[in-house]
Amino acid sequence: MTRLASVHPLLTQLLILGICILILPPFGSALIEHIFVIIVADEYAGTVHALTMDEEFMQQFSDGKFTQAVRQTEYLSDYRRFTVWLTDANGVLLSSSDSVPEGYSESYFLEMAARFNKRHHYEVGTFGGILEEKNITIIQPVHDGPVLLGYIALHYHMDRVARLERLFLPVLLLLMVIMATANVLPVLFYWKFIHKPILEVGKGAEEFARGNLSYTIPVQTENQIGYLAKTLNYMADKINENGEFQRRYIADVSHDFRSPLTSIKGYAEAMLDHTIPPEMYEKYLRIIDYEASRLEKLTHNLNALGSLEASKRNLQMQTFDLNAVVRAVLETFEGRSRESHTTLWFNTSNDPLFTIADLEKIQQVIYNLVDNAIKFSKPYTTINVETASRNEKIFFSIKDQGIGISKEALPKIWDRFYKEDASRGKDRSGSGLGLAIVKEIILAHDEHINVISTEGVGSEFIFTLPKAKQETEQ
Image 1 (tube, rainbow, N blue to C red):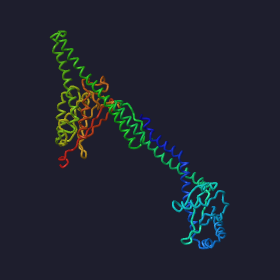
Image 2 (image 1 turned 180 degrees about the horizontal axis):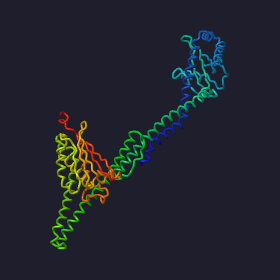
Image 3 (image 1 turned 90 degrees about the vertical axis):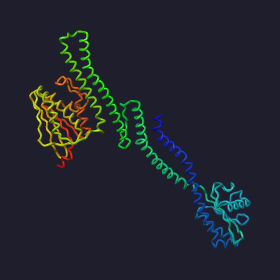
Image 4 (image 1 turned 180 degrees about the vertical axis):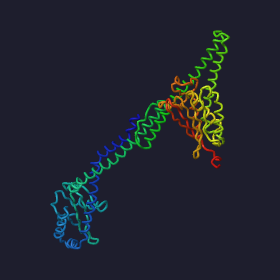
């Protein structure tokens, strides 16, 4: 059905063209003949009328000098290449430029003359069978005042019209072919670049609606339809990617919940059925508490990540000193820093650095970045934290001397639940949501975050915040 519809305009146009080519020769021939008959009839009717207005001719006719009048018409017929009959008022043939065929009848002539006076000024035919071939016949009465003196009948042979017709018909056919070609070309253009691509886009939309997101609309035109097809293809790819991401997301969440739950359930059952002796309860209760903390942290991060989309419209914006927030966060990591044998170094001026943002969420960003840096830093190394003001922006950076990130993994670190080769890192309890949360919060503020990393050397994370207006005014 779709295929038939796609070629329908072209087939219709070709069908019309074929019909026109079939009917043009007879129709065009008849049309050209009719036009030339009218032209010839009008011209020679004027010639005959001019003859009846000629004083010398009328004088000869009225004086009965028919021989001289006939000679004048014969000269005219030789010059103009037609046959002239000259009759009296009763239709009696006085003379003719050609011999009169047999069967000439005065009564029929007068009948034809009366018809000419009442209906039209010319007629095409054989004059009642008197003439051997078709002629254009014109009959003009000759009057001397109110007195009818006679008639002039002029016959122009149709073979001369046919010769003109044969000359002009090829020209008409050529014009028809040119016009048809000029008409078909826009249809071909419309069919190829508009109609067919629209059908392909419609088919693609149907495939996407049925869930076939792997279908690609095969439209490559560089116009609005091509742009629409590319946009739909891109949309389908993104929806497909999102679907795949959701499947991976659910699998990762299930895996991260299953591991601590399995440990909690296993140790609890072992304690209940006394597989674990009472003197070892404290050890395994600590493991259960640790796994429960993992679940609590994972649930908190999932809730935080899920609320970020809505928080883009409802950020609690306020002006605060970013340096004070950084110092407070770093103080909470002093114990972790000593345990991991790392040093936290804050490099900034003593002056306040005011920004306008959501305080709690920026605290979370800094917390996650510091936590991430400590996890992956080598022992006895320094983690450098720095804030600086440039133009209308505040820059925060944190640089560690850790294991670094490979080039292949660098674009993926912002993905939810992504962990690069967890067996190499020190963090086996992480959820893989920390950096995803960081990026979502920074994007919610319409700011930027970037990472520079060399595998085996370390990583540096940098994000921006707007400078508060009151800071600018100071």
